[in-house]
Amino acid sequence: MTEFYQKEFQKFQQGVQEAWLKPIQEKAFASFENMGFPTTQQEAWKYTSVKAIAEQNFILPNAGSASAASQNHDQAQALLENSFALVFINGIFQPQLSRCNDLPAGVTILPLSQAMIQDEKAVQQAFVKSSENKDAQEKAFVAWNQAFAQEGAWIHLKKNALLDRPLELIYFSLSNGHAQVAHPRNFIVLESGAKLQVIESYRGMAGENAYLNNSVTDFHVGENAQLKHYRVQEEAANAFHIASLNIVQERHSQVESHNIALGAAMARLELEARLQASGADCSLHGLYFTRDQQHIDNQTSIDHAVPHCTSREFYKGILDDASQAVFNGRILVRPDAQKTVSELSNRNLLLSKKAVINTKPLLEIFADDVKCAHGATTGRLDESQVFYLRSRGIDPQWARNLLTYAFAAESLESIELTVLQEKLKQVLLERLNLKESALLGESLAQ
Image (tube, rainbow, N blue to C red):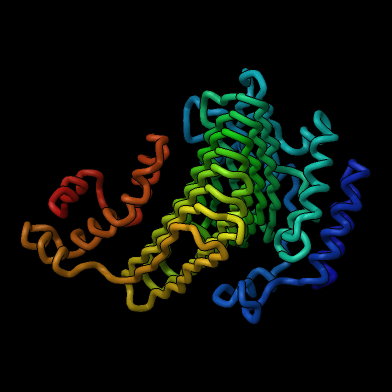
């Protein structure tokens, strides 16, 4: 660990107003220093190198640069017209772009910096609890986030509270003459019977220097609560994106999470879901689409800690050019977790001979009365289907792009937010150089 981050931390600490937060962040920074950046010698990082991150000195952005950027980039705007929204530029909250007025009873939506003032005791408890979590002590990027975290989203839905419109958490980034890093920290709690739809999006514009988003998001989903979570990563082509997403589920809670990864030069998501009370139901869906020399890494883990829980996980990947992807999906069924039902699937489509996928679906079962299945496939386009479309007069490249689109679009059909689903389909059409009218040819492939 270089002296650079020691100086950055000392400078950052001078601006921290909360006395209780300083020792927590000091402990986290000590862990970050002790661990250093992970290397490919570590099993969990075997196929993903962060050398490009470790070799740069990332500075924290200042409020002035973020404020100036907000006046010139409409990409930081909310996607949905009627949604609630918290907007951050370079990790700094933008009240003029956010929409959090007229909230229903029992719903709190605040930027973390404001929550530290209005709900200090609860925020303190959340930080203390997260500091005791093994991730903050064993994962370098989580410790780095904890050491510098001071902004993000603070969401709390009380018992039976319902947010009647989707909530968007928008993190827009760009570099301003320096390599910059933001450490978004999101705490989201649903008490028993609460319902929430949330879109967590990361967007950016390429600049002369790279930027890094290093985010941590914690969900606690109470008894009978329902969460629909959509995570869309569309970082700039030269950006880095590291994220930790933790979900804890209580009795009869329902979680549906979608992870769409399209951007960044290198991106990694570590998603852990713990089903810790009977009747919990968890569905994880993912789609990643890499091109050029992109590298996208998905590490997922579903922990069945108790009996009578259900989980499903379906991830798809499309790899083009000389890009690479990693998928490690793990389902753990603990000794007492009888009557578990779980399914894990990873399917990958290679569009180039140079593209590489490393996939490892894993079941660890320590109970004997369960129904579990897992599988992974990797292949190329079916040439007989390509030939069929060509026989109908469709250009060869269009035929391949249509089949690729059909493979990807299937993953988006389960997204209930129509506007988001259509927006993502348009992104796929643009990436594949297909006009909307080309979708007429999709029916020929069916």
